[in-house]
Length: 226
Length: 375
Image 1 (cartoon, rainbow over the protein chains, first blue to last red):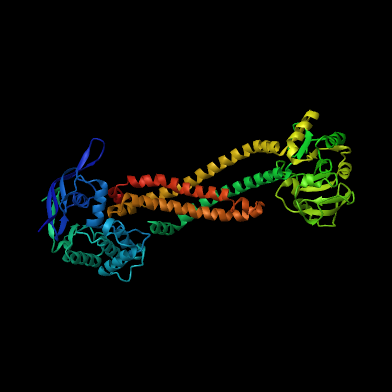
Image 2: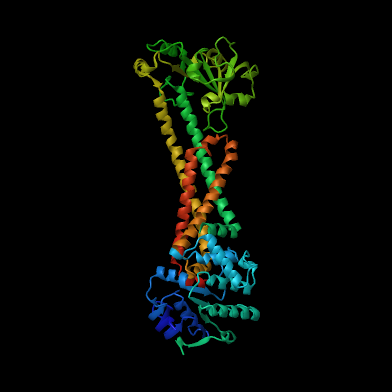
């Protein structure tokens, strides 16, 4: 199995004041293969989300090396990181983070606008693909609804559909069930497993051990991976 | 991103409406003020154009039109007999204010113009009558030709009698509207009648001089100025220069008002867009996280500010139409004036661009992660 994510000695410090920094990651090493479903677990403040943000290219590591799909992304320029996020990574946030002025369909289609070059699709094709993704997550009848008109579970399904919009290699889910009831939780986890079964690598940060079934578990403590 | 900008505007209706209203008021003010200024300039340009090749012989230092000039008719007769002067086409003229303006800065609502019957063309140039005649020649001594605005003021028609200073006048002509106060507000009567009714026996305000040959006007002017050294001969060019100088202050004030309106509009939209960026920080963070480029988010902000200013601008121009009717500004001086329309377009475009600059800069400074954490 090829490694999709390979990190070594990953450290991340956050400035608290001009002279004081707080370490969030203290030298994490990790390897996640293509097609894996990995759950990152650990107590609050252990660095789970920070690790996910590094993998998701939302911020660079302070120290260490991180390879994503064979490319060193540790020192990559912002523009390249942005393009890589659009092309290779799908995000699912705890708070859904849908754009409130856009319908479910438009939210999914919006993500495809970030693709440039040969892979960029025309708007009708983008809308067709967005419809297909929403049908895939079980929302064929809610496409024209605004996020405010959807339940929490439905919003998260739209967010999952959006994460799949550009056919990414990697789905990063940060506490995807943190704001959902148990039925919606079950349904979202099943959905992530379906996506994983279709060949997409999934990395999920969670507090809820019930959601980690059939996944490889990475335990974190004090900014380190055990 | 244009379609997304429209959806963002639609999603925040109250804020968008308030912003558009603010821009609308600014554009309305701009176009109306510009229209008033245009009307003033058109009136003055009409007055000047109407003078054609005529010259005004009058007292020194009296501004045009020479209402303040007053001298004995005998002096005027000498001018009429001077070399190169077409006596038949020239006329002594007496100006008197019959109905003063409500605002002292405006032209009198009705201006009495006493002149020699047959010499009307020197004053009226090619102004036509909408009814009746444009000459007093052959009419009774109480005949009057009314300018369009004067006729409207007295609600008078051909054949009507008007009692002015206890003298009954008979309306024999009503002139077409020219857009110039001197003609539109004129109450044209024989010179003798004017002198008698207004107690100015033997006095005139000026002599409107027509040269025998238009091409010799300069020579006639020079000869008159030499012969009558204590008097003044005003030509079209001199009056134009005089009026042009007088317009400098209003133009400067107008320029300042335009600048203020421009900046107020920018501040309104910029404020709204800054609020919008602040409100949408998390959304912008999401956009950036899922791979939307900075440039695309910037475009979204610019489109929003351009759409808001364009909508406000169009509505402001439309709102200026009823105001034009109310203030009696012809549409050609406001909505249909290329100058006003062009300025408003430039204002809309510049406000859209400038008001997007600061929020746009703020957007480019947002890190996706910080934005996602923003509460």
